[in-house]
Amino acid sequence: MRVLSALGSVLFLYLAVIPAGLIYATLDSACAGPACETSVLSGIVFTLVYAVCAVAILATAGLFAHHAAAGSLEAQRRLPIALALTALAVGICAFLLFAVAEPAGGLVAAALAAGTYLLVATQGRRV
Image 1 (tube, helix red, strand yellow):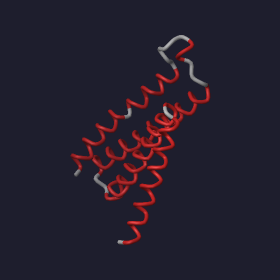
Image 2 (cartoon, one colour; image 1 turned 135 degrees about the vertical axis):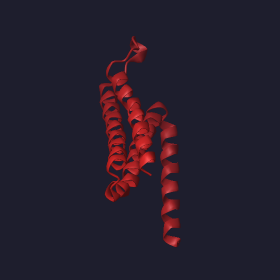
Image 3 (cartoon, one colour; image 1 turned 120 degrees about the vertical axis):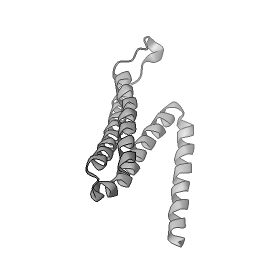
Image 4 (cartoon, one colour; image 1 turned 45 degrees about the vertical axis):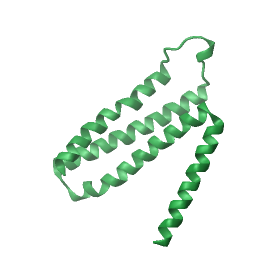
């Protein structure tokens, strides 16, 4: 298990490069001209969302590394929570990107997500 944690640490450290690159691309866009202009508010929102994703991914990588080095049961218990929080942050980021590009599609995705949540929540109560 500790070997898998070490591999997970390296993988998540590598994955953290993606939101870091997106932060850089948001702050220093290579696009020029009036067609490339975005609002300051959307730039701030996306920078914050990308930063949250980067922090969540880096925290998960650190937790994997801690478990690989120490092998503590407490770190092993925290791994599913860290993975769920990372998935939540990445899911919110992907949803915001989709909703900004296609607002109608964002509404459909929100409705599908709400329906899926309600379905899963009611199924959990039946078991």
